[in-house]
Length: 271
Image (cartoon, rainbow, N blue to C red; front, side, top):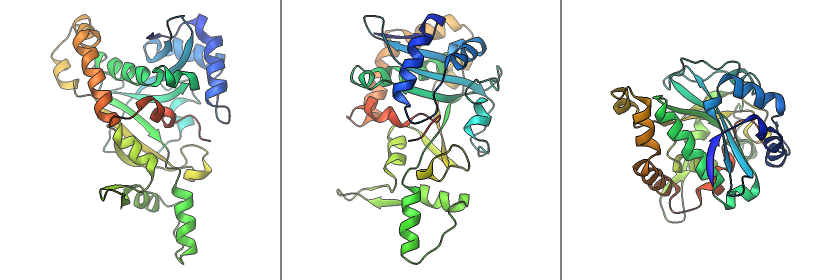
């Protein structure tokens, strides 16, 4: 089993994976994959098993990004509807365009391997990190509950969305956790939540809000002093890098299945 760059011969299989993974959402077609490969082939990765069958893929692009400034564009605007013609070759961050994994892929480690490969690719390219936008699917229900209780918050107001994003409750063990379990899941992956993004995707449960978040590349500063890409790749993809990747996934996974949790990490669609 391995993760590798997507090739043209893979496209038919990738379209099939998309049709299963995002049955009720936006699905990439042949045109998307051709455009992505032509613009940024290094950011288009797939997972194949020992028989050469593909069970998942992740699509990335570069962009100029400052975590101190909130995102104000939709997924369609950021990614050019998934064709990534907005890719900036001089961008300082990777952006998570899409992650699609067939249900069988979760059982054989496809999601973990793709997430790990995306982080390694980010390190090798000497980028600051990976930015992505997730969901907060409990938001609409929370607003309905508050309305029934006599409050009438403006659900379209980003300040209301931020209030919900930051809310915590005590779990059964007494420890504080995010009110929205999906936001807690993001944090458990080692992602830092930034701010709500209005009108990001069509998603009735999140009232079309996304949550911007980042994974910071802890090798960014050390690798600035390493001009040789070959050396960087040896460090990241060698035995030491593989061991570090396995340790990181175990740590952020909290001892549970990281691949099962990765189902949430596609900004391209929402059920």
